[in-house]
Length: 128
Image (tube, rainbow, N blue to C red; front, side, top):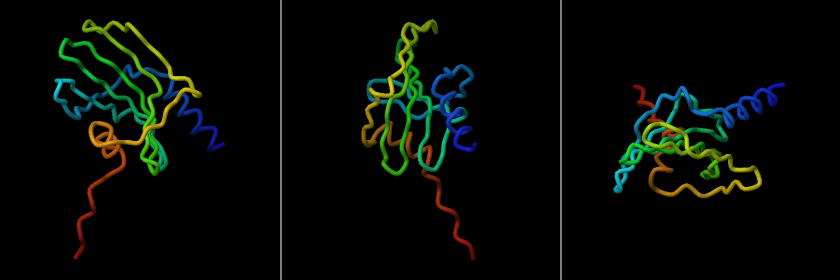
């Protein structure tokens, strides 16, 4: 029963768009792209996480990306993406099929920042 509930939660997370997102700013890259993450809707277990990111371009257009991240393997895969124009109108939406998912190692940069925001926490203070 527990596995069924987890599978249902993950499948809903994978199919629902991030409409009620609470975007937390992550970083701005050298090209001026602004990266945000929605930690509020993230689904996280000790082994994996499913999370949405938002990339805002200088012209105001943006992309929403849904990522699956494997903790121990330190790998990331794009699950879904949606492209919006500056007026907020969706112009493209694609689900990556299960057979087409490409797991890639997490490298230094935005993906590593995302990984760290999910699993790496501050060390507990030493007790006396």
